Length: 215
Image (cartoon, rainbow, N blue to C red; front, side):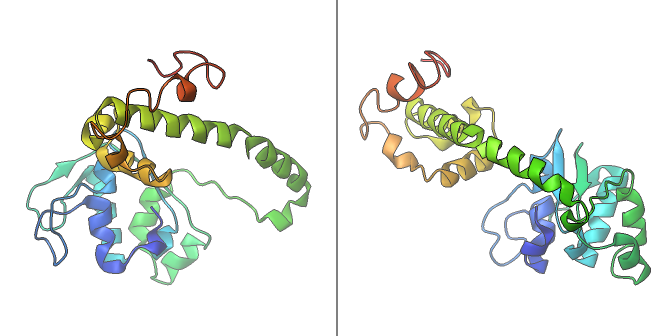
């Protein structure tokens, strides 16, 4: 979550979710990022941009492992690792009152300080080579991921919920992957595409080896 890219009034709902009718455009209940990250890691970028009120809610969650979705009276629990990043000095921000001192204390369990690249120019060749090498890998992964999503949609008749369940992913996360690759689920509904639309030509044979993702 990029804390600086979300409107202030929606930050808490993005983090902790909301119930239907919690505010004007809350037409349905929605799980927040904390719930979606259950058992995993939530990365908060630009943590210094987090509104002061949301900082208090985040502090409570870090202390108690519990939270309440916006507009709800129900207390929820989640086990989530939180990693925060900022390009400003959080200690100085806290000293000026621009960031909660108690939240900084909770987050500052382990600090990784990354010097500016201009202060470590000897790293530039190694970094450039690393990213250049990682670009075949990234393309191959994208091809495999897209093919996998298409196969799941095809085998589930274009039903996003069923496809997400088969992939053992949250529906929202699966939908984001579809949007990333501009995949339209309607194209995979029964009667729209014929058998083999996502067949061996995509997943098997020379590309990934027969049966890489199943039949």
